[in-house]
Structures are given as C-alpha cells and as structure tokens.
Length: 153
Image (tube, rainbow, N blue to C red; front, side, top):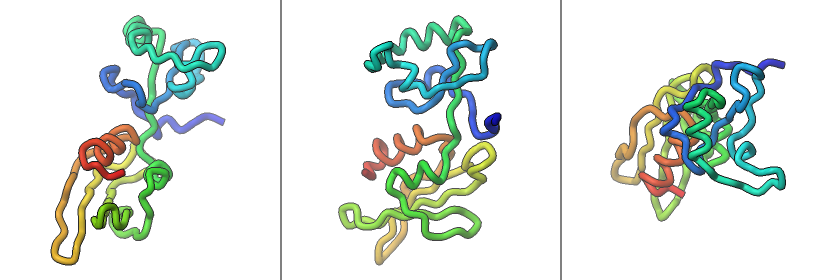
C-alpha cells in the first residue's frame, strides 16, 4: 500500500536536530523506503548515535531525503490534550496545570497538508487571553511551542 504523500512535507535541513521527529530515505532515487530518523541513527547493535554532521553531509551530497508528518489529532492527544468540541475548528483542553486552564483551538484539515493554525489560550473566571497564535506544521513545532515557549507540560 502506497502512503499518501500529502500527509508529509520536506523540512529544511536546518530544522533537523536531536529530538526532531521525521523520516529519512538514505537511498534517494533508488527506493521509496522512509524510516524514522531515530531508527536511522542507531548502529548495528541498536545503540543510538546522534551524528547530525553525517545527516547534513548526506543531505547536501544528495544521499538522504527527509520528510515530516504534518501535525495530527493523534499526536496532539498523545501530548495530553483532550479533545472536547468541534465547530469551525478542533478544540482541545488541558485543565488545572498550576491552576491554569489551557485551551487549544486548531483550524485547517489534519488530513491534507496539516493544520493551518493553532491558538493556545488560558481561561479563567475573569478573562481569556491568547498565549500563542500561528502556524504549526508538525509535532516538533507543537512541542517547542507548548513545552519550551509556554511551559505547558
């Protein structure tokens, strides 16, 4: 069964870092097989060898091709967000993290080129404020926004 190429995009080589989730095809042009990058970075004994220099060189020399899965509902839910409403957008929430209620609103189509925008808000008894509003193509950016920028763990 052939995979739907619309579910993936090609990341910039500068986006790839330790912890970045994507797939790599080491035999570009000879095979259509993509494997998870974290698997590709293991040696014959299964030991993780994070050598980003080799990845960049392989990419620059045309031996490696990368693709990243667009952000999916399943990935968002695996990060602890609970789906609770659908209107013009998908709405998720996380309740009571340090007495703060977080709301995630997502617009776009998760099946065709990812979600278009995400909006993360806090909501309390007195007001609602937007913490982030912007494009979020993959789980990598989603984790960075929620964990690093907003400290939602």
